[in-house]
Structures are given as structure tokens and as C-alpha cells.
Image 1 (cartoon, rainbow over the protein chains, first blue to last red):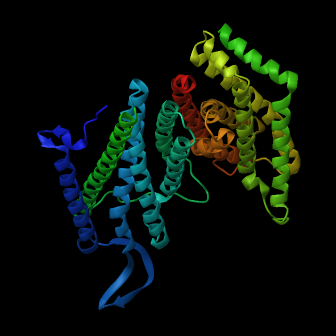
Image 2: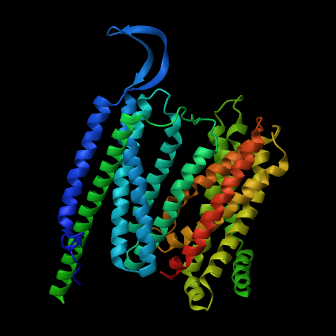
Image 3: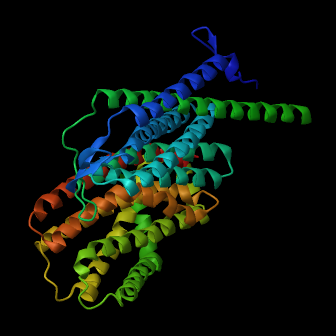
Length: 255
Length: 228
């Protein structure tokens, strides 16, 4: 069984190799621009009032300006990215159940690995943020719970895979669990938002969206992160395909 | 329909003969209550158990149901009954429903025992905020979800190397939304703060929504599981 390597795929006439490198470059550039804009260009978000006006550096300051809010430009893109990649776990799970072809199971597994990476990044940045923040962006609190549940779901996926030896059963069970887990994640989020909790009040954002310069930085970061996610996925996929070819070669040598 | 009744009857008759699962589930629930007493023993006289009573109750139910779900399927696998069921010309969804309803019945029996016991041990003498008839509803909705999704996950976990140990790992993250909604509804009733009725019906509606979505998914996916 010879499976085409990713480099031999041509999409719009450009070989897969070049696409991956190109995406990596663009993704890295966009993410870097996002960081630069976030730190130097976007205005600071106004936080809570301080008790009395003080003079700092010759300027009268009456609000706490939140520097920690800038982590938002990294945190939200990875969060959205993790959820989008998780969709592919469920998608490849569905396709596997429909066709029983091994390649979909491989892709589902890799998508889940990338999801794990992004979920861990989300949790770390979210935790840093809640340490430093001051009360303006409390809307993320139920999300931290939901993300923890998502981490547990992804870990459960890998535990399930590790505990089954038969290949077809492993792929089937993993596909089913992936689909159920993907259904569970938005439900968790909706429920923690919709049911008020007396311990962690959800403070809703007042005064809506992002101003122009913030929006630019945010969108750049979002697309950059998505491209980086795609690249990680492709690199991992190539590794898996190469492994499969080695196994096939070994088998044919022995047989 | 006849197939469904046949499988369900088999489960119930087997259980009534040995009474194995009900006794162990019932005893386990009581032992969990004893552990609660140990946990709360140093909390002080002014500690208001009513605030966390719903959480404790649902915790007991979740752990007892993990036990029951495991046992209901381990027997089937060990004695080859699962293979026999697959060989017989029975529709796969029927097996799912029969097993799920069987689990639901056993869970309900245990709940009927545990709820009054819990009241007797921890809540005697305290005033319940809302009307009493509101208490069984979250239990019903929660149990339906636990039985349905639990049957699917238990069938998966019984066929792995880890056997029963894998089930909690799979079960608890998936159950989280339902558990959250059920605890919210039950707490609303028990404490009865002003405005509890909105929280109660809200949470119940969300729990019912979870049940609908997840049971549909479990029903659709079961035949893939049981064939593998």
C-alpha cells in the first residue's frame, strides 16, 4: 500500500510542501505582527477606578489601565483555534464511521493532538490572565471551567485510545467518543453561561466590541494562529504517513 | 417491541434473583453518606449543610451510578451474553434502549432509597425552601441522562483493557453539563432564595436539552460501538 505523501498532493497547482512552508511563514508573520501591535500599538483598556487621582509621570491618572488585558490578543486566538481543530476530530470521526478507512482515524488522532496543544496554551494564558486582571473581563470565568472540561475530554480521548489494542475497535471507539466529546464542549459552555453560579458571578461585558486598532490586532492574531495550527497538523500528518510507509515496507520485507 | 421487553425482562429477572447489583449499589450509596459525615464532622455547628446538600446528593448518585453501569455490562461480557445478543436477530438500537432503561430502573430504585436517607442524616430539622414536589424532577431528568449516556460509555469501557477503570475518565467530563444543571436546580429548591423558581425551571430546561441532544447522539452511535 503506497500512500501519497503530502508533498505529492497538488492543490491549485502548488505542491503540498510549498503550501505548508508558505502557511508557516505567513502564520508566523501574522502572529508576530499581532504581538507587536498588541504591545505597542493598541490602546490600553480602561479598568476599575482608583481611589483618588494620582500624578504618574506628570499625567493625572484616575483609572487603572490594564496591561494584563493584552494577553487577550494571544489567549482568544488560541482558544478559538483549539475549538475549531476539535471540530476536525469529530468530522474525521464521522467520516471514519461512514467509510471505515484508516486514514480518517489517523487524521482524527492528529487533530486531537493539535487540540490538546492549543487547549493547554489556552489554559496557561487564561490562568495568567485571571491572576493579573482586575475585574473588567470577568466574562471569561465560565470559559475557564469549560476549557478545563475540554482538557479532560481530550485527555480521556487519548486514555481511551491507549487502552485498546485491536486497531479497528480502537478507531471506532475513538471516533464515537470524539463525536460525543465535541458535542459536549459547546453544551458545557452554554450551561455555565446560562445558569448563574453564586460563587463565580458572570460579569457581562458592557459597552460591546473592540475598537478599530484592537480589532486589527485581534484578527491578525486569529488568522495567524489558525495557520500555525494547520501547519502543526500537516507536519504531524506527514510524520504519521511516513511511519505507515515504513511499517508497510517492513512487512513486505519480512513477508 | 417484544425484543425490547424480552431483554429488559431478562435483566430485571436476573437482578431480582441475585439482588447483587441493587444491594451493592444501595450499600455503596449509604457508605458514601457515611463518608460525608466524616468529611463534615469538623465543619462546626454553624455550618449550613443546606448550601452544599444538592452537590453532595448528586455526587453520591454519580458515584453509585458508575458502579451500577459497570456491573450491568461486565456480567454481559464475562458470560458471553453480549455476543449472544449480537448473534440473535435483534436491532441494535433495541439493545441500547433495553439496557438504558434497565440501568435507569436500577438507578431510580437506589435514588428512592438514598434520598430519604440523605434527608434523615443531614437535613432533618432544616426548612426546605421550595415545595417538595419540585425535588424529584431534577432527579428524573438527571437520571435519564446518566442512564442513557452512561450505557453508551459503559459498553465502550467494558471492551477496553482498563475495564471499569476507564468509565469514570470518560463519564465525568461528558456528564459535567448535566450535573451542573441538576445541582443548580436542586440547590434552588432546597435553599429557596427569592427568585429560585426561575433558576429552577431554567436549569431543568437546560438539563432536558442536554438529555435530548446526548440521548439522540448515543442512540445513533450505539450500533457502531456494539458491532466493534
